[in-house]
Every structure is written in C-alpha cells, then in structure tokens.
Image (tube, rainbow, N blue to C red; front, side, top):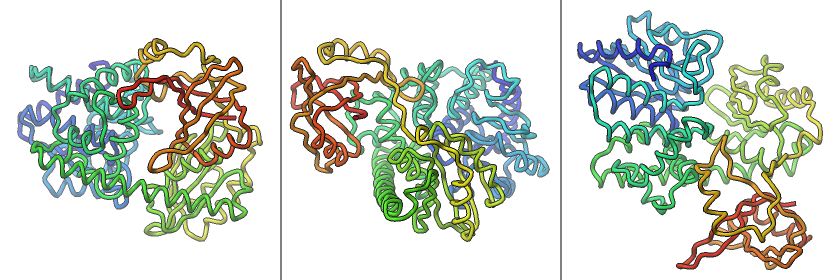
Length: 508
C-alpha cells in the first residue's frame, strides 16, 4: 500500500488529527462503492478512537461527489478534516473552497484524473500518472481499505479478523461497481465471496436471508444482480445513508427491518424500470424514433435515478446508442449508454452548446438541458452520427465450438476453477450450430424463463434454458426449429436430482 502516492502523507495527517481529537468527516457516494468505502473508513478510524462521522450526498438534490453545500455543512458542524472516498478527484473548486475555510482535505478515489489535481492535503488515487502503485483498477472501497491498513500499521493496531472483514466489503464493492476481475481484484473477490458466506455482519446476513439467496451457492451474480441493487436502490430512491446504516447495524431485529426496507425499495425500483422500459419501447415502435441511429427517448414522468438503467436495457434490445431523458428540477436530465463503435462523450462534445451540463466517457454519459432543446438534441446528435448498419450489429465473441458429447460434470467443475466471473474475466462462452429445438415452452411464475430440449446432428440431446426476451425467443424457435446457439454448460439441481443443462446466451 505504501506505493500509493500520498498514502504515507495521509496517514501522518490522520494520526495527528486522531491524537488531537479533531473532528473528521468521511464524505462518500450514494452507490455501493461509495457506501462500502465510507463503511470501511468509518470502522477503520473508529477503532483507533477517532472523532469521526459520515455524510453522503443526496443523488437528486446534491448530485455526485463533493459540492459546496456539503463543505458548508461540514464547516458549520465544526469539522476540521474532510476525508472523501469514491469521489474527490474531480472536485477541484469544491476542495479549494474547503481549503479557503481552513479545513484539511484528504481525497481517496479511483476515478480517472481530469485536467487538474485538486488542491487537497493528500490525494490517494492509483490512476494518478505519478502514482507508483502497479494495479490501477482498484475500486474506491479497495483504496479506502489500503489506507486503513497503513493507518493501523502506524498505530501498531493489529486486528487480523476485522481487517479481513473490511476486505470483504472491498470485494463486495469491486463486483458491485463492475470493476475488472483481474489482478488484485480477482484475489479480493475470490476470498471475499468465501467470507461473505460466513459473515457475522448483521446487515449483510439479513439482506442475504430476505433476498432468498442460498448462502452456499452465493457468487458474483448475487452481488451484482441481487444484493448490490438493494444497496444502490437506497441511493436511487431515498438516501444511501440507509444502506450505510444497514452495514453498521448491530441488533438482529433492526438488521432484518432495514434489509426488508431496502429489498422493498429495490422491488419498487424494478417495477418502475419495467414500466419505463415498456413506455420507451412503445414510443420507439410507434413513432419515427425507430428510424434513428441514436435513440433519444424523452420520458418526462420517469424517475431520473433510473434513466441510466432504462437506457442500458433499450441499448441491449436495439443495439444502438441510447439517451433516456426525464423531466427534472430546472429542465431536463438524462443518461446515455453506448455501443462499442460509438464514442458517446466525443459526439456529445460536438453539440455541447445544447447542454447546461454534461459529462461521461465512451460508453456512458449524463447530461442536463433545457426542455425546448430536447428535439434539437435528437436531430443534431443523429445528424452527426456516422454509424453503419454493420456497426449496429451486435458482435458476440465465443471461446470455442463445443459439441454436446464433450459436456460432462467434470468439465463444469473444471470451468468453476476459473471463477469468480465478471467484467474482465467473463464466463467461457461456447457455441454449436445445426441444433434442433424440441418442446420449447415458457416457464416460471413470472414467465421469465424458457425451457427446451436441444438435439445435435448426432442425436445427442441436452436440456436448454434461456433467460431474456423469452417471447421473442419462443417465436424464433417455433418459426425455425434448427438454430445456432451460444451457451455455457451447468448442472441443474432440482429436488435432489442433478442433470446437465446448457444456459443459452444468444441464438441465431
């Protein structure tokens, strides 16, 4: 950890502040990474006797990261030192403002450095050009964990069990923040998953139970698509302080109540998302929008915090760049999601005059604009677009063709050695063609899965299951029963019986 630029400086400053009893405030972010990073720092400083508290911005009122109001709030509360986590690297003006007020500011972050390093007393971010730390893809919570480790060393505080538990939260955030599962992150997550299965943290235990996860089978999917969204839902629809409260809770009864609240919030978020997606699809299919290469969908009544999720779902369905805009205080806000061939941020820069505020990168962006400019934005961004039909064809990379006769339980077990799977370490994807589809049917109480039997040219049969747009898949199978598929093999366990099956990912 000492290779992280400014980590030793931050440790010496914090050591002095703790010894002098100065008030320290951790300012996190409203997503899973920010919440976990804030928890790690709060726990890591509290055990050393620090006079420390936390603040997390409100997604809609405050927006992302440090702002002047948060600085003013800290100043009025008599805070001496602000310690950011998962944010701060872009807060140049805000940190200068805090310094003018006489406050000490320490930054821990993992985002890309913009044109200027903020004038903080110490800046810990592995993405700084002159930072010697070799692994640049840590999440914010992992950077916070590294700082805590060095701080404890300076105090000669040794608590191995607690330090490992804090690493589990860094692992949780690594998956939830969709970081590459390579290098150090792979170790975090591999170890962290095992620890999560046995965690004594009352909040996480209650969340695992109320979401119905089988603890022994818990993997990255459950963090990314079940537990993580519950943490994120509090920051989307309410306040992320509730998620931080869940991680800090000690009483079992309180933990169960908080976990159920977060699950209910996430269920509400899912329903809102489904309604938003359905409205967007209807709008595209029934208007001239369907002819656009860049989809700009204006949903005035949509909650602004889910615009990005809806944009991602629409992008997957139509494989085109998508902006979803919503009515917000003082105008229109929106989120964009892109495809590989389209640099969303650079294209937005070409029509920046239309925005009151915007930012992002190649694959995702956020923007604000006046309502009267919505139509102009749609027309302009499409006039500038030079995507070809080929660019808008989704490309699927397979690892190899794999005939059914090669699929065994031993192979499935060997593939599990490559886990944890996620961004940067995708699950191996296999393919086979000329497969006859037998008995396709939609199953499940929510009708969200399709089951069938697949037969190859040699008569080998394999049960197949598909989770996706099951109605479209069923229509395709009934129209042309001989198809090509990409898939990964798995073992299906049902009522004590084990059987091989393939999970279908794509079909043609």
